[in-house]
Length: 125
Image (cartoon, rainbow, N blue to C red):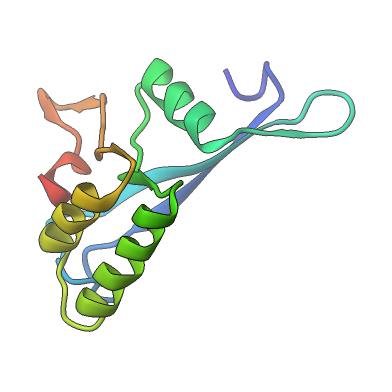
């Protein structure tokens, strides 16, 4: 699909052994970070909502996405960040951001491997 349609799908690999971002995944996993249509001229970079829609259509894993579009939500974001940036782990940070975001799109993966949900689903669920 990507080659035939001249697309580039960028993904981030999160490993279970490198670094520690508050929680360590049980297995390595990848998430889509960007989608670009290469076309025959100027590339078209997908917006965040378009990336999410693309991933849902093709059953690709996405990160949790939060939108802060009002002064109140942006101010609340910085308060949450200041309170949790040094000690917060993924679960309480996600919960706090869900409470203050104008829009929250949770982690999602529609892939099935060996009769179970993908490794990615095990990370934050």
